[in-house]
Amino acid sequence: MILFPAIDLKDGACVRLLRGAMEHATVFNTDPAAQAAVFEAAGCRWLHLVDLDGAFAGQSKNGAAVQAILKRVKVPAQLGGGIRTAEHIRTWLEAGIARVILGTVALRDPALVKQACKDWPGRIVVGIDARDGRVAVEGWAETSDVTALDLARRFVDAGVAAIVYTDIDRDGAMQGPNVDATAALARAVPIPIIASGGVSSLADLAALKARAADGIAGAISGRALYDGRIDLAEAIRLLEA
Image 1 (tube, helix red, strand yellow):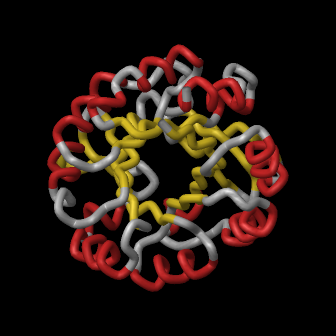
Image 2 (cartoon, rainbow, N blue to C red):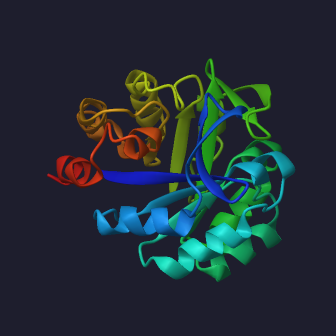
């Protein structure tokens, strides 16, 4: 199982939000590239980048910070937030991003996602962010009537590399991930699932790893890595053991 350290970008800085609320942003590092280097030095194999401003604006807003990260580290990075057109996808993949995460557009324009999977095999990830089981979009500002499972099933045969499943009510709250819901989604679709939201201890990671056979292939952690609740090197050893 892969651990993805999260670098959430707002106004060019590394922040963490509480349950997706932009007004509840805590700045942890004003130099995202330096933070990426710290994670790389600790042994991470991937980085998880999110352009929070871009998620609300529908276009890249922290491109300079992302470019600085790409120049600073060698580990691959996946990027989400505001990527909503074929041109956005192409721009970032050609710029060096290993995988793009498509969230809002996965709900609004699934045909674009399916075409992107054909154009860029293995490099398209679907982000499914759920509040009370319903998919939230536009930077989590809007909640749809579509369930996380229904959306995931739309991409079963599309060639999606993975699904990042976020329980919004757990995100940044340090209350542990929704292991059962994540495992249930993983069992329901033959697509690797990356758990996100609430991962705050080694015990949380162990609980997710115990459900790897269900299809949970990775976990994202942010705040717990920044405030020291999780030692990244130790967490990597746990998940790769």
